[in-house]
Length: 219
Image 1 (cartoon, rainbow, N blue to C red):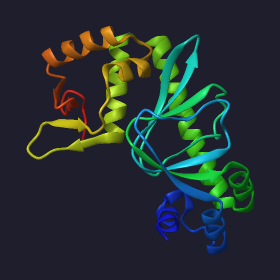
Image 2: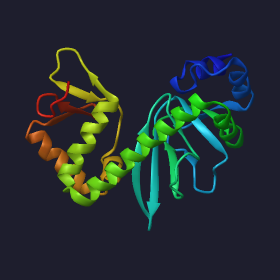
Image 3: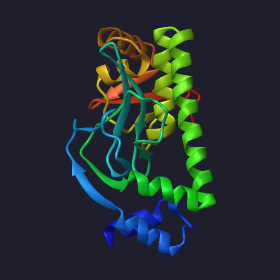
């Protein structure tokens, strides 16, 4: 009952016929995983994953270097849906995942046009963000990349706290995590974060990063 309730309330599965919802329930299961667990590897592509609880980082590896291409939250889908052959997923927090059989899901998409369109739009948006990240790495300075990724994280995870002129990025990220998102080093990110703090663009509190709402032109 808990699983089918979760599936039904996801935007991507809304308006699916009841028989398809039941089939989806029969071909999926919930699984808990601890923080830092590697969920998928290039060799492990048997499932589609929907995040019920927690945060997941998607990354690729090249010559031993890690580049985080996305951070996902509750309700988002990952696994077996991109063209990146060297893609991994790791739990940034403790997570609860709904794991759906890949072959069943691919067949389901062919049966429902609305679901097919939703998946295509979702994947198109994900590819756009990956390309945007690669473009930043090629054409922007490290500081510009840092400001850009903080702004994007704020758009996705930002929380306005009472009587604050700052927006809280409501996800705990290490300086190494941020470095892996912008193609830099932990040491460089640490120096730049201190610089942005001195310039009053950001502040930190209890390991969370807050962005100056006016300086970042956030609403």
